[in-house]
Image (cartoon, rainbow, N blue to C red; front, side, top):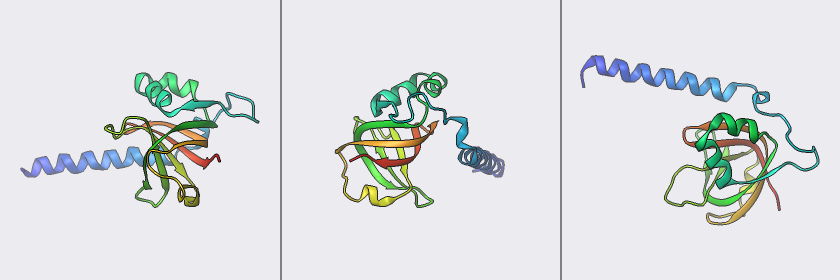
Length: 142
């Protein structure tokens, strides 16, 4: 690869890292407005939430405000590069994308497995990022 190409690759990575940092550090208030009574957050299937964001992220941001109870089948369980535990919910096992729910406490995820249908209550909806809908502050509803 020519040196000029490497410069463009590095520049692109720096821009992407800056955009990701800005997204991750923005205040949660940009999405956190209540759309239901404080005692009962609205419920939505993970497949419905993902399709809404895939179709029109702006409209989905307006419709699906946190807190939300999200119901869906577990596609993946893991930790991100910072060690934050998460689940990915969705019904299509052949598609990598879905609703990625981040948890403060990994103990919520110890007793679940891929393919299991779960209900999670999430305090913050960060919207669409890199082909996943990102929700944070989630706890498992038992």
